[in-house]
Length: 265
Image (cartoon, rainbow, N blue to C red; front, side, top):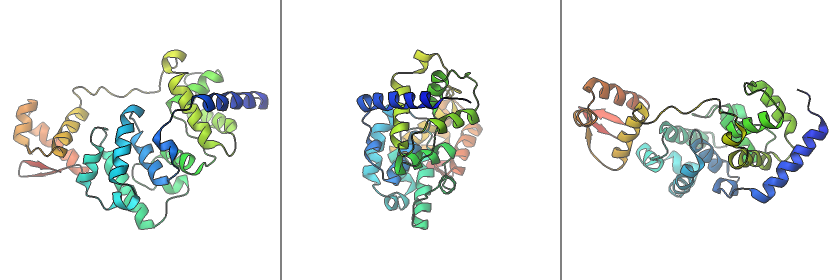
């Protein structure tokens, strides 16, 4: 893709000037502690900012350090996470903390970060950007939309093309502010509705899904309620075998335990 240096410079000036006047005040932007950035980035996977805000604060009050999270019981971690959904992420972030504590150092490269549970290419680059201001690029749904709109790309532009353009646009030494600016502009100004550019994928329907049943089980367990397979089958009007399979999946993932028909954290 051919983008002139003049166009790149003009876009940088515009976006950073806009961000200076319109930036959102989000708690994970007030720290460069890599542990706190790790927590925020995992929480923000598939979850909206307004839902993450209260949980992020209380989670870090409960587990203020890598060591505190690593040494906590999985049940306590799940309780602190409850309400965010995709609860496997809670165990992933705890397992990541345990691995970091064991290594006695926080990973410094994308490759090292991706050795942690639940950390893929996008999240690893995001951690490097927001914790270390590294000259990396990360493309979320907002940034993708801006690149397509601003540079007249087709909506089916591939990831390699978008990454190539994103790297050309990145102002050296300003990665943290640049990505925050892109995310804010896409979230508040150049929205999907305003631009007409649809996200690549949509979250599957929650109501009536297995996710809903999984979330309901964990919500009851963290509230201290006693559950049995028989009771769940009756309340949900599901066959016992269906309930056993669902709980079996969750047990394999380390989210709960099933003993003699009873369900525990």
